[in-house]
Each structure stands twice: as structure tokens, then as C-alpha cells.
Length: 94
Length: 143
View 1 (cartoon, chains in turn cyan, green):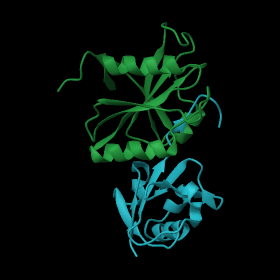
View 2: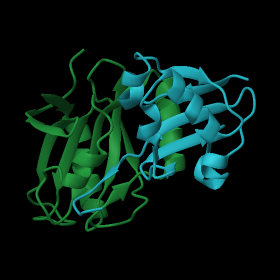
View 3: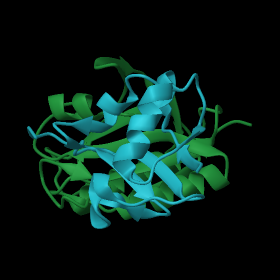
């Protein structure tokens, strides 16, 4: 079961510069574990304390996973996953 | 160095003034690898805040898909500070995630919504390291 994962510029150091890689998994959580097996260290950039990092967005077939079960979101063959860091900041502490 | 055309520069400043006292944000896209800020995209600050900005996650995806279709990248990522100087805050530095982009900051603290002095400064932010760069405003980008 192959799922295409689109990798943002800032994480391409983990994928030898590849813009997209394939990974496997029946849930987002399993997919990220599989991804980390081939690209060690990438999981830490996506997950913190067992949850998706606040400023990392992950989309499955254009849906923000926060609305479809987060790390538990179910995946099937042919799904498209996109990882995009939030574009955020500001003058105040956050 | 950031080279930007007058019309885009003016539009960024106008956006910052219009949204004051909230922070305004957006990007200027350009062909991948060109370093040419050609296409201004004003974004909604989903945080609607005077001290924080964030692109809405759905709009963020739409924006990036559009850029991928056009072989573009974010050449400039801009936002305003409305009560402080146009220098990246710790939050800006911690969340900067486009090492190839020019991070433009506009401060409206002096003029607010009105015409008046604005600061318009540009930075590279890579691995938590901030480097200010010169801004050159031209009538039109050269070919």
C-alpha cells in the first residue's frame, strides 16, 4: 500500500532533497513511523509529546488531519498526504 | 539583497496600514529559483491579532498547491508589526520555515492606518539565524 507524501522544503534534508516520497501505513501515525524508518529524524519534526506539532499542518486528500482524527486519521492506498509547516509568527510571545 | 518593484512594495505597505492594529500577512510568489517576487498574494490573518499572525490552514494548502501548479515558490513572506519595530521577534524566528524566502517585516507603529512613516525591512531566517539584507525598490523588475 503506497501513499505519496509531499515533503516541505525545510524537511527535505531528511529525504535527500526529494519533494515527495512514498510511505505505507493504515493510519497517519503508522505512516509517520514508516516514514521515519526510511528518513530517520523526520518523526521528531512532525510529532511532539505524542501529538502533531502545533505549527505543522498535515493534509490527507486536501483535508487538514486535525478535522479527520489527527494522528489516528485512516489512510488507504492511493491517498495523498501533504506536510506543510504553518506560516505564522508575530510580535508577541506565543 | 531583496529587489522588489514599487507597485508590490506599495501594496504590501497598503495592506499593513489597512489591517492595522492587527498584523497583516501574505506572500509574494515567483518562479522557482528565480528570486523574483512577482505575484502578491494577500492572506487573511486567521489569528486576527495585533501580536500574532497565522495563515488559515486550508488557505495555506490552496496557496501552495497553486504555487506548485505554476512552478512557483514563496520568494517573499511578509507580515506587519503594529506596535514594535520591523525586526523578527523570537516567535518569528522560531516559526520561520522557508529558508529560501525573504522575510519582510513592515512596522506601522508610527503611522497606524494612515500615510506616514513605515519601516520596511527584509531578513533571511535560516536555522534560527537572522541576517538583515538590503532592500532595493525598482520601478519594474528587469528581465
